[in-house]
Image (cartoon, rainbow, N blue to C red; front, side, top):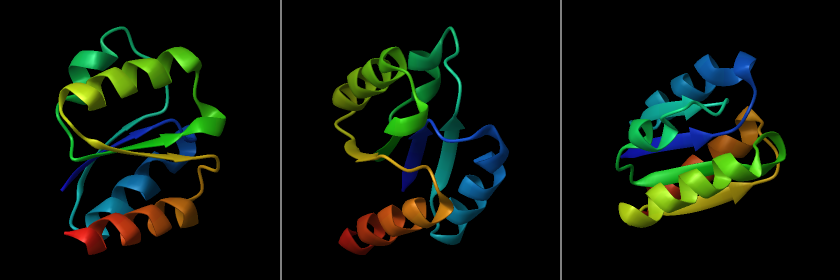
Length: 95
């Protein structure tokens, strides 16, 4: 399963990636808006939006790309490791 994480804290990027790897998911993490974000997102299976730490423009871009690739979108207000773990637990059990 491929996961794209939008938002979160810069210092947590490695922890997000390690946690995804533990659930056998490949992860891309974007904590900042880049010029070509829509091209970098690709076509993931799951998009996680940490809504507390992300701009509206970045959310719109991520949602547009998720719609194109028919990806599952999960919104979470907190950007903690525990919150991501709960999301991954729930989503990987569906497969």
